[in-house]
Image 1 (cartoon, helix red, strand yellow):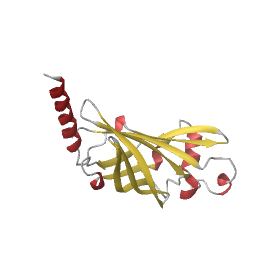
Image 2: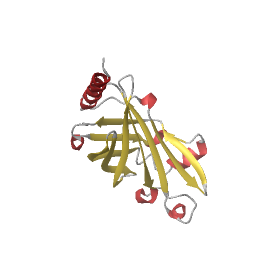
Image 3: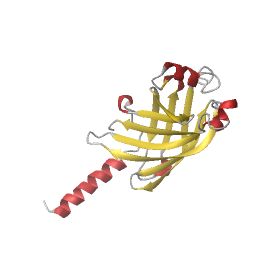
Image 4: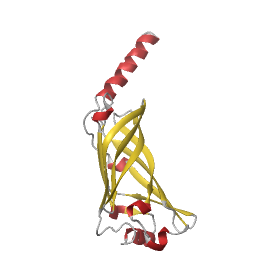
Length: 187
C-alpha cells in the first residue's frame, strides 16, 4: 500500500471516529479524576472528588451542538487527612449537608484547535451559579474510548466558600486550581 493511500485511510478512519462521537458516552469512573489544590498559609493541600458523573455529547462536526454536564458529590472530597476533609465539608466551606452537589452545565462549546475545545457554562457550588469557560482537549485511545482533559480555576470567594476571616489576607488562597481527566467509553 502506498504512503498516500495509507495516509488517506488513516485520515478517513480518524475523521469517521471523531464524527461518530455525536451522542453521550458513558463515563468510565474508575479511569476518571477530578482533582484540586488549595494553598493554606503558603502550603499546598491537594485533594480529589471520588464520586462524580459526566454526560458529554461532543459533536466534532458541529461543536456548537455539543453539550456537557458534570455533577460532583461534594461529600466524596478527600485530601487524605480526615481532619482537613471534615473542615472542608463543614458549613463555612463546602457545606455538604445543605449543598451536596456541585454542577457544571454547558451552554456553548467551541473548537479552538483540532482536538482542543472550550465549554462555556454555569458552575454552581454552594447554590451559587457562576458562568465560567473550561478549556479541554480530547485524546482518542486505542480501545475506542476517549479521554477528555482540562483545567480551570475557581475563585472560592465567588461561591461563598470559606467566608469571614478565611477570605482575608493570605490564610487560604482564593484561587483554587481544578484539573480533570474523564475517560469516556467507546461508542
